[in-house]
Image 1 (cartoon, rainbow, N blue to C red):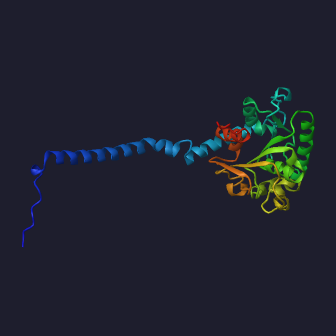
Image 2: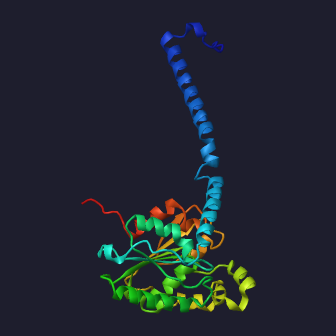
Image 3: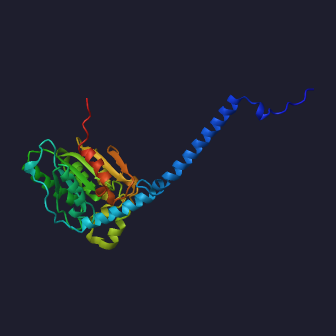
Length: 289
């Protein structure tokens, strides 16, 4: 029986073999250290950057303050664009604010759109906007007819924030608005209702018809869900993943193109990134042939 051989003496290894093994080990060590260095260097942006949970919460808080400043402007805002200078090939955009909102709450969004050449329209539909959503949709219907009768356009785009999206959808689906609407963008809209509406009921009670209509499985929402989607209308749902007012799952609408951003409810009408997505929906980039 042969005796086990002794391990080779390092001095007996060939120079080429020892150098190759050393280089491989050194390279592996460098890779490990460089990965660790990158991980440590990226930690602040990963944990506190704009796309981190903390960063998104901070951004949402700042957006909320900006939204409240706009809300305080109320319904008296100066018109920033005239129909005379508009391009007939690009329809005007109607902005509809949400529950307890004002035209001022959409002010920053309107200003950005005007600066980008959009023709923007907004209406005073009440300081608190607590009336029946059907009634608000009928008011929108009358105002749109008056505008289009005096301009070269045959259709209009609608951007509705929160309950404003329900107003636009009811108009397009139940009041014949599909013949007047090219695109409808619903931003954080409670298609399936929201339990936050209980706060409106608790504070406004019988004076707020729309608060009851915003509750999940309300008679109004059941009525709105019946029937086919408005024909010829390009439907979009732009929702916020960190929305506690209207949770993401309650904004889902079959048949509508969905876009989700990692922000909160008020950020939908305040954040620059959201605006760029909205502008891309209203004016899709022209692809080269």
